[in-house]
Image (cartoon, rainbow, N blue to C red):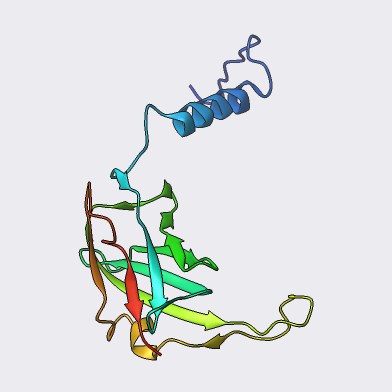
Length: 150
């Protein structure tokens, strides 16, 4: 039948939006973390044998090179890898790039310029970096420490 419409007088405006919101919240809460299990990954970066004080680390999955996980180098040389799901990385083999930098500071300790690269550029290029790690459960102490040169 053309033009026949059924009018539902019991339907409230906005009920569909409320239902959609409930579904999204329930989906976000979920029954657990989606994706692979994450393994904590932390280490220390040294530059010419001394703790690096600034820069970044990138883990590039060998199995999926589009998957890149990052960590910031802290003032004591330590870093921790994080990704969209939280801290850590899925188990697997990774190529690792490291960029150690130094940013000029004024007498008050405020940054006042652009960072300058201290590490050799081969360590920051995914095609030339010699650094690799295997992320795995119960990795020995120091397994994720990274040594680079200037």
